[in-house]
Length: 194
Image (cartoon, rainbow, N blue to C red):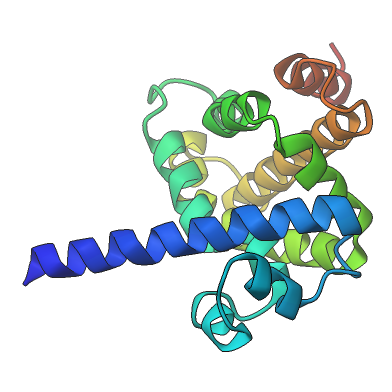
């Protein structure tokens, strides 16, 4: 029975990935606002009703599940060396995402769509709030006994995510020509005063 569920889940993920790929191509070609769910469904070879079995909104196609990616960030943070300072561990927890984006040729177009669409930017900010909550325990564990640990941890997480957003925006604005990791390190150095 569990292997049947596993096959079902793999099939569901494959359909979600297909819808996402088709939608992203349409968003890049036509713009997010101009692309309809009916167009996405037709291009994916399904009905709009089937689309809604996989995604509640167009925004969900781009933004995805904040808990899923947040959990991978949390896991990456937990795998960092225990003696690594919290600010460095938070940045290095983003490495897998930086590598994924840098290696994905479609990432620039998708990023441009996301950054230029107000509703997607708003959803991205909401998603980051989920990430803050998921990263909070691991960050607190690295701080030790300090005054106002939750405040400090929250400030570290939100500033790291903001610095990453600045680097990501610069990377997308230059059509991915610059190295995203170098941009991130440059932005971090500016914030840290180095």
